[in-house]
Image (cartoon, rainbow, N blue to C red; front, top):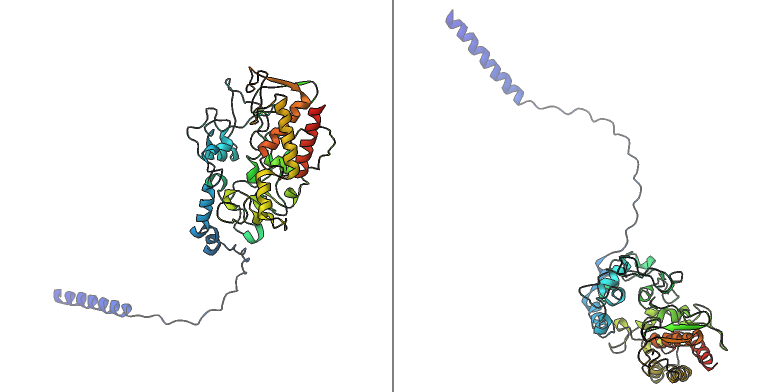
Length: 388
């Protein structure tokens, strides 16, 4: 009986192995395919991409394009050591220090006086300054000062902003209620607005006005170095009544049909002018002044027009004779030395206005070219005021 039980168990185990072997070799037979599902909804088309191919970038960023710009820059006044001589000063850094200029555009300037209060200019406006204690190092305005990121890479439709940090209109330092915009037919994008951040009158002194006497306490009285943009616009001189009328604001042809960049960054003749030297070239002038010759250009560039030269010299000589300025143009105090708070110059307001106009034309440095009609009015009316 015991042997029969063992035999039954062996037969059961063997049958299990047979079953496993059969199931391991089983293959399913595919059934009939089901009905296709319904198509999904089409997606919305994406926005076409802007052409930002390497070729577009290389047009400006290749060494062949940039190397001449670097050479031109090093020939410019911006690269000259005197351009950043006072760049450590908290007051001057906004235009004479590369980092100070970047801080200005970033809105980081607030100059404080000794008590910690914001310094105010002659109009009661806060004077912007990057750091109350100034900067440890000053460097020239360079590539990184003016250029940062492109606003758009769609140059065909949006124009090439050359990655300038600012192309927006500017509120003037001397009177923040006045906005200056250098856009024109020659510069529809407003790239010249970069220039007027610094090439505008500083806000240390107000334009003389009113009646009675006016007290000058500095040899540097005047708009200080940068009235080029306001001269082009035809504003910020002392516009008192005289025999010559003043042209309307912004009516100069160099404002309506030209721009800072179109005149000062034209095609170079030999690498020492145009481009990033910012020296005007004859190539630029003849685009409008088709009859201009090299000789005429050099004469105007050095001395201005004949009318300007004569009147400017007359105004200069009258101010020297009266003891108001030195031969070199510094404003003099009562003692005949440079004007200061301890050696002030007290003159009638109309005479202070004549000094302001002379200093404006001197600091503009265009010899009347930026705005010939406005220059003529300032000169002739100032001469008349001193003759009264």
